[in-house]
Image 1 (cartoon, one colour):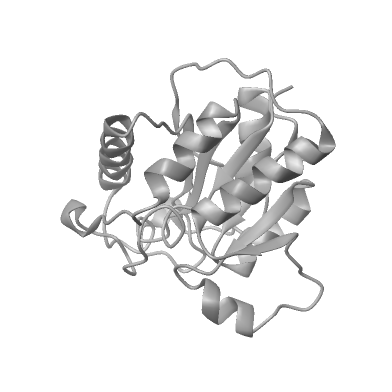
Image 2: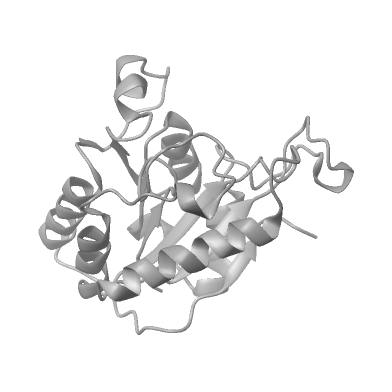
Length: 209
């Protein structure tokens, strides 16, 4: 079984801009490529898990989500880093796209995307980590049995000031690089890493029938 770091996308890897409906709005934090490369070098799977309710709301289509992830891949590759898999939830209970108007099991804070990734990629959730800028990321990780890190980028600073009842992070990091450094320290303290060998990543719309 492999260890993984599950990364939220908007506000964690790239800047939070609301509904990201154009590729020219993609902006990386200056440390994101380096942080992901550090996780790659440790032999950890890096998996992006993201709610994309803008699809269900009709603001953009799934092709834009895939194009955004392809753009992220190109930027990472230029810095010798990679994401191993992407999972996204296109649903929303109040969506205007009828086929996507549903209360699904993959929309954060439910852990459906993590469970699907674990099945498809052979991930040990108990030995893995979630990193995100919202308490719903932390709640998702807790529900799946991972360790969880809240970052202060994106919505993170506001979230930290408004703690959720019965939802706590294992660590609150200034940014993704700080989170990656903490994860590596945690793994080394536990005395184990990962036996992961790189494979081409899938693009998955999570929780779809």
